[in-house]
Length: 257
Image 1 (tube, one colour):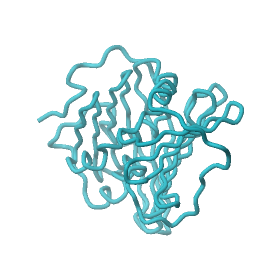
Image 2 (tube, one colour; image 1 turned 30 degrees about the horizontal axis):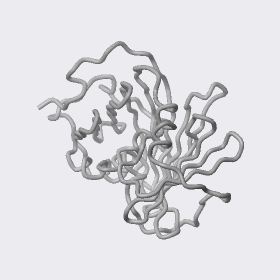
Image 3 (cartoon, helix red, strand yellow; image 1 turned 90 degrees about the vertical axis):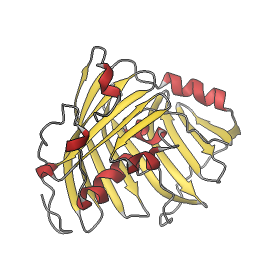
């Protein structure tokens, strides 16, 4: 793995991804804090806008949180599962890669463990209902209140907590939801039927971050690409495996002391 702008990224499986890390082993040195943590919350930041707006052309009509919640329910995960993935980040000067695993328990529990290759660091985020825990702890401040973004990364639409207005545009089986919060920031979810295919965050009329999802012929998520225009950061995620799971142990949803 290279940490220079010109080097190539090596994908190596970090040990322990299939296990829950303890707080004592969950560390995040500077290089990982720079590129690994934005992978968890790249859609959350209101970064200085540098990209042109990509608001879809078309007529939006007023909608409601209730209607949006119904769409969320239709796109929710159907089963408990473990999703394994590889990730790679590049901000033009630093490249990192690694692996991760997400444990998903409908309707509202998610645990993501990520590690950088060559033992450079780890990060964990747990969302169970309204509760969020993370290691490093600073991640919580980035996740709340926009925890929807981590679900979107895995292909699921979740209702943003702060939504002052909700609008909807329909074009055949393509549906775009536009949610505006009290600060005037806009979140756009693009759906094909009940399947999420992308999301963007806009601030002051400019796109600050974008998520593009790739699915296979059966609609299963295979890749995700996140771009943070403020940081000039691109993160690519490839799903390497998924498996159904029985009920997770209770301590899955809390960090070890």
